[in-house]
Image 1 (cartoon, one colour):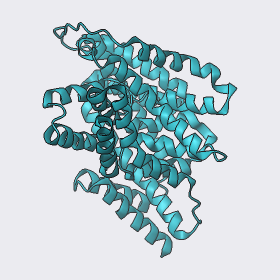
Image 2 (cartoon, one colour; image 1 turned 90 degrees about the vertical axis):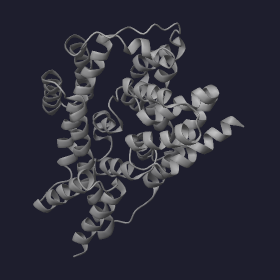
Image 3 (cartoon, helix red, strand yellow; image 1 turned 90 degrees about the horizontal axis):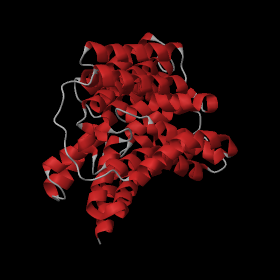
Image 4 (cartoon, rainbow, N blue to C red; image 1 turned 180 degrees about the horizontal axis):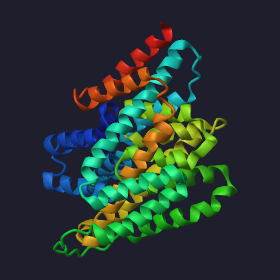
Length: 381
């Protein structure tokens, strides 16, 4: 049965897909384009472009679209569940295990917080090189970072993204492109549902703990442009003091080490925020953070090429991407750096980890192992 095959193919990928969204794209290409030939290179390239154009979890959106193309909405859901299940299980387990506070455990936690500094710094550099290619885009990134340092709040983040989109549509629209004629209309129901939830959920957030939890993660998932790392500043502002910085960074660093989508960071947070019903909290948070991106894929899957050929829309996307770099720069300083680096030795470990990841090209799981060993050794000596 085709749906069962889709599930198992993505489940096996979810077990071994370390390295984040960029690596996932490579895994998908090897299996679905080169080996299985479910689609050709040009079709796969169009899916990558679609995932970059829309907010949401990029690699998961590609997997969702492959399942959609292969077996309709049921195939898309099977691809999502298969690819996400291994990471969901691991992150839920980490959130619910009771760890004894020992020197080893404390060392591991501090090591993971240092890893978070390395990973976010690497993401900032990569995204800066990709999205800040002009004076205007660099200015947007710097202005966004400054505003969020001075006025750290979710509403400021949303305002920054909206203003960046408007500026980008005017300033970063680039050369006119030939418009692509499309005879396929957008699927209106997913787009309407996306907007109804985005606008309506905040008004209902206080009526139920579970609706409030769903709203928090749905809003964050709706605004994540530029990859999974951007979920860090959005969730940090959304959750505020409801979770300790130590637990927040432990979950974030653990998500880096886990295979599969980075958005299962929400699984950890949902379970942690719902101690009475951790599984329900994990399921709600995970569904909520993935849902916006998937609704947009369903709505625009058949018409996005025509849409993206408009220079102003492309410019708005460029403006948002530049602002996202600023959001990540702001998060790199607070809470990531401020909560992890307390001494010259910590700074030295961070620089060593960054060198291993960026220059030596050691996989992230190796960097985590090295830094954790050093951090535990410091505690034991």
